[in-house]
Amino acid sequence: MASDIRPQYLLASTPFRFPALARLCGSLALGQGRESVVALLLVTRIAAAMLGEQGLFVVAATRAQAAAEWLRASCPDRQVRTAATGVCEAVIAGEERGVRKALLQLVAATSELLTPAARAELAPYTALARPSGGVPRR
Image: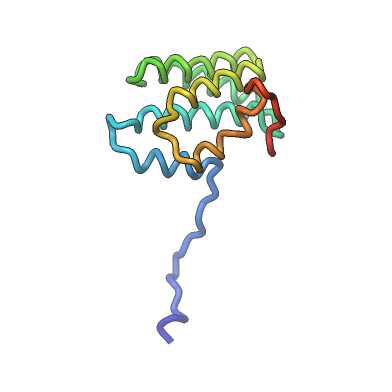
């Protein structure tokens, strides 16, 4: 009988576009890579808005402008900051290939922090920037 009782206000899990990256952000300590992975998550979401099936370029460009300013002021790792703002600048310019290339540079800058699951989430957005080419999975 006790197993039939369900909490009255049980909420369903909220779907999130990059769950492995979000989980990674939560698992790292401040000063131990969390800021770098948060920057990666932020700009990946902006890049995905531009590169995705819906093509939300205007929204992505507006968010990229604000994100670039925030990153310049708050991202402590210079290499990550440079790569992340590069993604933002490519989104603002509307350069799909530039976005993918800059995102690939950001992944390289954060590579020692990334889990295999996080890398798998990023792969579709960096596929066309690799020398071998490829088609992103959607």
